[in-house]
Image 1 (cartoon, helix red, strand yellow):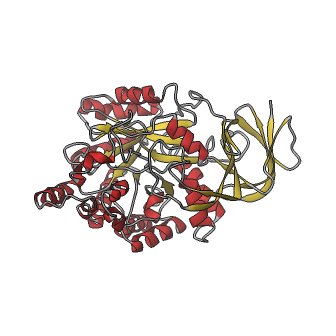
Image 2: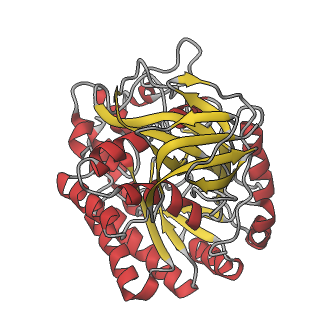
Length: 466
């Protein structure tokens, strides 16, 4: 049955116009005035936007002796309620595994649970010659982006030789290299010193990962990518120093090679939140940590002037009170030491609403830039545009009817993310999804869940720049 979304204002990365959107099967077939169909979705007074794409998530991820609390059903449900219709998760390579084996492991985590469409980045932790050669075949696997960690010494971190060799291989095969940019060697020294001094409270997570070490690693990654000729995407950038390294690189002619994202939470919190009373600050432990108010201002400027191209979430939720009632361990694992607190925060559900409220409504970014940062740029950079991230004939009908006047109060009691807290408890947002569709299927309508587990598809992504 054909369906028309009628009476709304279409918002894309480049245009704003009144139009109906006609859907047949899984795709958009027409955008224009006076369209009709048997099925009608009323978008009067609302915007019609391409569904959000979150390119930085960690669902069902083993970490620090536990696992992130959202799986591929609960995480997808939360995403849909927030207006996100596709995400790209990280398949983290176990030591000794091939990249194919790594992806098969993560495909198994999604099987039968996925509701929205998804892709995978491969996080490389072990790069013998055989795996280096296998990188050339990841285009066949549909996973055309590789992440390497410059932090988490002794666990995920790779050395500069490994990073550079991966970049050289990526340059040959049009793969996008992603980096977690912090100087893990220096951080390891600071963490050990803090523990030896008995400084174990959550606030020391931020104090042992200072912004200068993120700025240094960002600049180093940029220069290595420049020499290797590889495209580089810096994930979860948090501070003015790291942003400066990106801005300088792009200004000297590397705007088609060097890219960066920030994440929603870094606009709103500082390292002082880790020093909340008792153990409460553990809720805000993530890596890189929160910075200062001046860094928040720098990030808003970065998304406004295109020094930053994407806003993601790094959604990596853990229970605050885990280890009981069938829950896996959570933040409580670090009550005796900040170094044992699982790193990560929930956020896949709130992203679009927070950026609309505090970005668009506050005059920091335009409606079109909001769509560009949360949907179109992610699709372009990660090889799935214009199938995704567009409102145009031939695109998948991943669409959100966005009500700019709808008010919601964020609360752990009403969220769909599977955790017992939200960083934004009690915050009011103005502007939220009314109806959410994935490939023409209604997932959410007027607050009611319509989705089905197993209906989401893996998206094979093209090589970078194609």
